[in-house]
Amino acid sequence: MSETREPIIVEFHLRGEWLSPNTPGAKIPSHGTNRFGTRYAYDFIQVDWERRGWPAYGVSFLQYLLLGVPLKEYYCWGQEVYAPCDGIVVQAEDGYKERERTNLLSDLYKAYKNAGLFNPKKDNIQSVAGNYIILECGHRVYAALVHLQTGSIQVTAGQSVRKGEVIGRVGHSGNSFAPHLHFQLMDSSDIATANGLPCAFEQYEVFREGKWQKVVDGIPTNKDRIRFDSQSI
Image 1 (cartoon, rainbow, N blue to C red):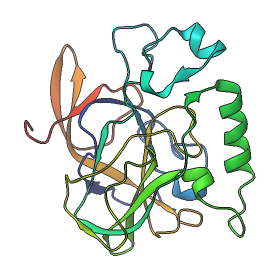
Image 2: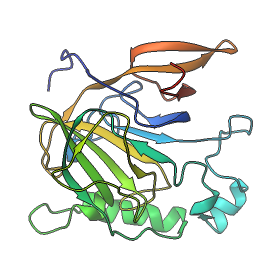
Image 3: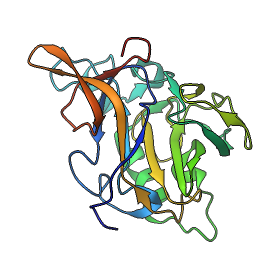
């Protein structure tokens, strides 16, 4: 796919402060692969900007390594997810159980097994995506919001949604190392076979030189402290 294609602009789909550790603003493919439509995909987490290493959880790093972390200790788990565009819900798959706590070794194994060995002819895409929503945002433009919290999806297939409408919550389902929101645009509603489409956000703020600065039609990097509040921008 040509990198010269102009990004498709959508509204930022979260509220508050966020970090994107995997973003096309840092590298393409952002996730190291073109599979599952992830070429231009984003991951979003919330972190403690005052603690060394910007941890995404409220316990020590040693506990994370040795014991894992309960989902409730992750800052972003359960945060509301909003529709990035006006559109139609094409798929809304819930009911995939989340693991109750993270574990580095077992999560690495699951990632290899679920994504590396995935066979689209026989395997359920929820083993990779977990609970997810796919919105049709335009002609051959589909937004996927992935790894949602079990039981949080508030829309159904065929439903019309408006930009900014709450549709689910951030979770840890499927092929997930830790609670986060995976977001991507695709040219098909089939995650298993889709190609990724470049995407930028119509507006958000980034913290630079001690103050918040507005960004228009931007692609955050993996170092940017970003925030969005639809009421204040």
